[in-house]
Every structure is written in C-alpha cells, then in structure tokens.
Image (cartoon, rainbow, N blue to C red; front, side):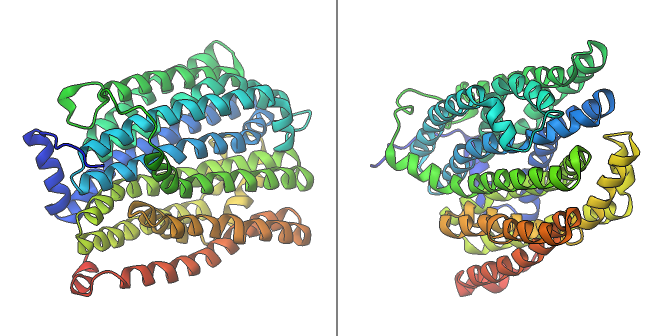
Length: 466
C-alpha cells in the first residue's frame, strides 16, 4: 500500500538529514548519551529499591526480591517484543521516507502494548503463589516476593509503555527529550522510595508502590509527546490503531530477538534460583541478586549505547548507506567493550564494596564477593555480544538476531549450569557464566565478521575506519 506524502517541518527534515550525513562519531554520541542516561535511570529504579530493601528490611527481603527477577524478565520480554520491534520498524520506515507507515507502527504498538500487558498482569495476579514457588521461593522468601509482586504488577504495564515509547521518541529524532523524560520519573523514585520504606515503614511493598507512582509520572510525559502536533509527523492520529497483520508480524519479528533473550533469562533464573536454594540457601540467592544487579547496571550502559546505534544503523540501512552502517557498528562495539572491561575490573577488584552497598551481614557479603570474582572472569566480552545482537536487529536480520540471542542463554549457559552445578555445587553455578561468555563470543565473532564482509566492497575499507 502506498502512503500519501507528509509535509514535514524544516526541523524534522534536518533531523533525518543528520542521520544520513552527520559524522558517525558525533551522531552516535548525540543519540547514545541520552539513551545511556535513560537506561541507567531505569536500572536505578531497581538499584534504589534493592539498596533500601537490603539495608532496612534485611537479607531475606533481598532474597525474596531476587525470586521475582524471572517474573520481571517475562514482563520485560513481552514489553520489548513490541517496543524494540516498533523502534526498529520506525527507523527503517523513516530511512525510506515512509512517514505514514511509521505512524501506523506507532499506533499498532500502543494497541499491542496495552493488550499484551493486560493479559500477562492478569495471569501473574491469578497464579502468583504457584509462579513464585516455581521460581525458587520457600517459606522464608515467599512472603517478601509476594508482597513486592502484588504491588508492582500495575506498574509493569506503565514501565513497558514508558520504556517502549521512550525508545520510539529517540528513534524519531528526540534523544534529549527522551533522556529528560526518564529523569523526571527517576527524580520521583529517589524521593518516594526512602519515604515509603524508611520513614513510613512499609517495607518491600512500599518500594513497589513508590516505583509505580514514579513510572506513572514518566508514562504521562512520554505519551504526551506523541499527542502534540508540533513534535513532527510521527504522532498519534486517527486511523493508525487498527491492527495491520503485516505491521504486527513485522514488529513482533524484530522484537522476537530481545524478547527471547529475556524469556531465556527467565528460564535461567528459575534454574539458578532453585540450584542456589539447594546448594547455598537464601544467602546465596541474595548474593546472586547483588551480582545480577551489578552486571545489569553495566549491561544497561551498553544497551543504551546500542539504542543510540539502532536508529542510526536502521535509518542508514534503509537509506542504502552500508559504509555508515558498518562504521556505527564498530564504534559501538569499541565503546561497549570499554564499558564492560571497566566494570569487570572493578567487580574483580572491589567485590566487597559492591556487596556492602546492598547488605550488611558478613555471610551474604562473602557469598556475593565470591560470586562477583568468579562469575565475572570474562565479563569484558559481553559488550561485544550485545552490540552484535542489536546490530542484526537494527537492520532487520531477524533470524540471525534470534540465533545470537539464544546462543549464550540457551545453547551454552543452561546446559553448563546443569552440568557444572552437579560437579562443583555452588561454585559450579558461578563457573557457568564465564564459560558461556567465552563460547558465545566465539560464535558471535564469526557471524558478525561474515555479515560485515557482505557489505558492498566499495564501502568496506572506509567503513572500518573509526
């Protein structure tokens, strides 16, 4: 179907021209900095909750919160199924100049997000105890996990809407505004969590309520952007909400890769939580929560850089400029590897300091410090893996992106977790992470080199110049 042309403002024309012509280094910085800040803000929501819960409520509460990670992963998976796919589709549509299609992606994404969110929140609420037991909760941790989940469930839909449409805001040329929007919610959260947990003594449920309120504020600001005509052609208008099967499958197809990553993370967390409970008790589960929180913060920085790369790679791929596509990949991969290497060095050198930020008892600190030293041995490789997966997602190579999403989590990490935990017990769980990092990086390197060599030969030599 051919869409009618849309008159865009001079500002919008300049934004799209910048994506096609501005130097890649400057462009990546402009798009990545706001997205990195946005991702860090999203992580800080969780970190602030966990610090106050661990320090004020105790180790059992941190362990209970860790039990909820698979549930959160499932919610995130269903959110990015729509959000990541829609962002990539909008970038590709803008690159080819099809603004009508980009608007339809926006409208279809809203309907999909609300529908999927309502379904999974209802199922979680109905089968809450059974799900948490399956994910590793025992009589000690179940009350804490249930209290947190019952109050955080309404906020999960708000979180998905905020995160997804914030990315779309960035893809349509408003990276700074996307960053400011996330800061607004974070400012609310950093004020409300201490109020609810420490002063009002509401415990773990108070952290959930504070996060819900903060995400509601962020969601209002994000959605308001797409309701204002002065923000360009990609806004909510009539006729864009009727689900188009071609668009829906296009969104889901690209979003399937990051969705599968999060679903795989959920499966891994189920096995990890149950194995940790068997070999180390709730102290080991709490230690895993600290390890996951620290590494997730580092990965969020990398994902922020990747989100900055995504509209640049997607637009230029649609605009048929392979030189710029390859160049933005290499620059993003370099930045991501620097970040994960710095995080790896700090985690191995100062694990006790990281652990004490969350808990005060010596047993859990010892478990956590050992976990960080062991599980992060090859963490510096992880940044490259994330960038490669996002690159294939950005240019619409769905099959390759899904495969890379599965390599580390399913093909390597899950079998190694089962084998090594039976041989080495608790240490075997920590050994699983560096072993799978090495294996996944080898596979990723082979695939990305092959893909970049298939770019047009006249652009290839120039593309690798950063």
